[in-house]
Amino acid sequence: MGKLSNQQVVQSLTSKFGDRISVPNEPFGLLTFETSVGNISEVLRFLKEDKELKFNYLTDITGIHFPEQELSIGVIYHLHSLSNNIRVRIKVFLDGMAPHIPTATSLWEGANWMERESYDFFGIIFDGHPNLIRILNVDDMTVFPMRREHPLEDPNRVDKKDYFFGR
Amino acid sequence: MTNHPIFTDNDPQKETITLNLGPTHPATHGVFQNILEMDGERIVSGVSTIGYIHRAFEKIAEHRPFYQITPLTDRMNYCSSPINNMGWHMTVEKLLGIETPKRVDYLRVIVMELARISDHLICNGILGVDTGAFTGFLYLMEEREHIYEIYEEICGARLTTNIGRIGGFERDFNDIAFAKIKQFLVKFPPILKEFEILFNRNRIFIERTSGVGAVDPETALNYSWSGPILRATGVDYDVRVNEPYSSYQDFDFDIPVGTSGDVYDRYIVRNEEMWQSLRIIEQALQKIEKEPKGVFHADVPEFYLPPKEEVYNNMEALIYHFKIVMGEIDTPKTEVYHAVEGGNGELGFYLVNDGGRSPYRLHFRRPSFINYQMYAPMSAGMLLSDAIINMSSLNVIAGELDA
Image (cartoon, rainbow over all chains, first blue to last red; front, side, top):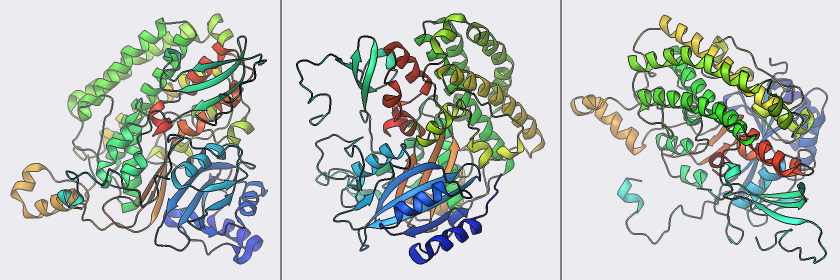
């Protein structure tokens, strides 16, 4: 099935973007690289519309929070080239105080709810999104609950301290 | 709800009616709310509201060791929970580099294909009910009961199965389980055949379903659809073939695809997939005969709980038991994405691990969530009764939608 190798994808990416993308690595064979918020739209468009690569299927968009990093909020895209049967993972890290990133809804309609979910849980603002409102949580929630500073349970409870469970 | 586009619309001369379809309407089979603007029987526009049974699984998963996350996955797509369980186990095995024996792979394939059959049985049976034919549903529900009895023999549970462990199964399949699987393979085909005779060429059923909710492949891919509803549009994407897991490459089976992507095609694709699942189970039973008996888990004492007698009588087993339960096992600091073909499409697990006792971040790529977002746009222009069967054939499961 696989007509393209990861090396070929890396080659066409580096010839197009040079050092605007990070050096890729391959955890468990899945090509992974980072890019900056200024380049992400162009990278996604290139990957989708290139005649060779054809990453036409958006598998997933999700967020991640590393509070100790300077750029603390991450956005992770998983793309899939169905005709070449190869996946790629792209990461963009954003400033935690004002995480702005251009939307991918102009490329894939399916990005709409995925981005709303990432906004709902991490507070990532997707600029240009047609309807960026909460999706799974209640509308009047004031925090972004998947950020690391929010505990899972009510911190005032005395019967469920971590040390009772050896953690 | 405060800044909802329809609720804030107070135009007194409005010519459409706002209709709340759900969240607890009996025709929607789950907690789905769609606020529809109706012009008579026809839907002008709609807005989906989801999240009624959101249970924060991704947040909970950040606080639990790997083996305690399996019960969370049960509660996503509860019509085929074994597939979710296996998908999670395989994600962790990929992360830890565990190679499972072939017999374990085949046992898993049997359970996953049984789960796929039970998932499709529900979907197609309910589709019949929504078009006004109750009989077929009753035939199929009896067969689903037989599948649940097989689960019971294997793991003791019926719906939220928590089946298997990281590295394999908690115990070997007993003889009754194998006997029940073999009996199912004999008894189920005639009933599925009878169901097809009732529906496939039924004039009323065809007129209700044919041409309803037709989607072309470009739109389906643009909306990131996956699973039977994508294949009904004619795209032959199946994770079992594209990225074989659990030794699916050893099996000989076909991927049914449709042409028009309408409700009828989805129905036909699901029915055909059940026949293919039966083929796979038959092959798996034959392959198991050739494998060494009694192997039901990989030999990984660091991750697979030892038997209880060993824990009491053997020092090493006690140490491993303690380390596994307290989560003091070194795990690689890396990230992994693993996808399985769930009942509704590509069920993905994106796991970021920092070497701690629980995942740093775990994201579920839930097919129902992604498939459902097209529902409101595609309902515009449909009759209300067509929108109901369209939702039924998307087979959106509320637990997976909201996670």
